[in-house]
Image 1: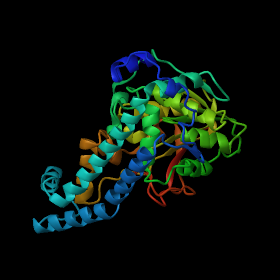
Image 2: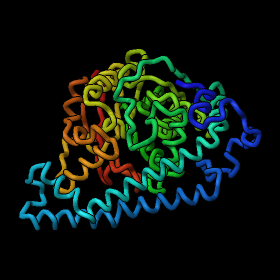
Image 3: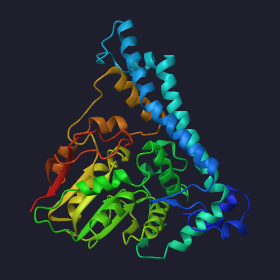
Image 4: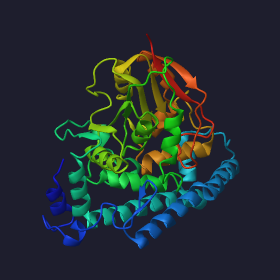
Length: 395
């Protein structure tokens, strides 16, 4: 992991210079907070973020419905079944040249690129302040942070998922970028961690109701981890992520929220925890971003660290059964998300038999019928009313 001064020297070109005005800024970036959310430091930046979020909502809503309708009509115009009986390559070739369908896709993609650029310009224009703030928080409490900068990172972890510059491991400000970027992904519905708090409230308990330790794998900026700590204040709650910048930001933010949640930079497939250690293990929208070869390793590791009767709650909308696209437009959409949004394992994710993978790892698999989506914007993974898979470790 690069040092703050190395980052400054290479990324913004003024070496180790500290800007006094930035040193003097308050930890809330100078504009205070709205509930749990630290406001962006400039009004024009906040306005730009709101504008881009509105565009995303439109692209994901009415414009995408129009694109879907156009796809159906286009298939019929060419004598093809909209329920995708045509070959995948033929569907893609047909739709990627249609102005309306590609107009929607391009608007969505360019909006996302603008969002990342806007945020990165801000964070790197004040990089010394943001990095200094994290440095000051690294050893502060009430939570605990463990970093492992010398760890070997699997190649799959270096993907720039969602086009995020540097991905989760290659940018010292990845946590900042991810948190404010996903506010856009959730289309304004998660500024107060609304979705994560709802999911924490729905996390199922072991049959004996005993919850002393919880592990959240792939925790990113720690929103679910903190929400779980708030639901279970007496429990020891850990958030793990391969991205050091992610857990650094998560720890800093948790401290601001007075949370004692613990964060560590470790691999989900090698957590380093003892056998039978946790009562609950959770993950949120993790597996569609994981290489297929790593999935069974992660699930085997989950089974190892869960105690007998412990619960694994992987929150993913397509884990109940393989769910290949049910229309020609779905085939096209799954392809362009993979091709242009760098969700490179998305097509595998729609076809994988996760109940079988979980069962092979040693878990008893059941549907969690109580689960539902608690937020309108959810990265397009969890569908409203979807019952999510859970696994219980066999005694």
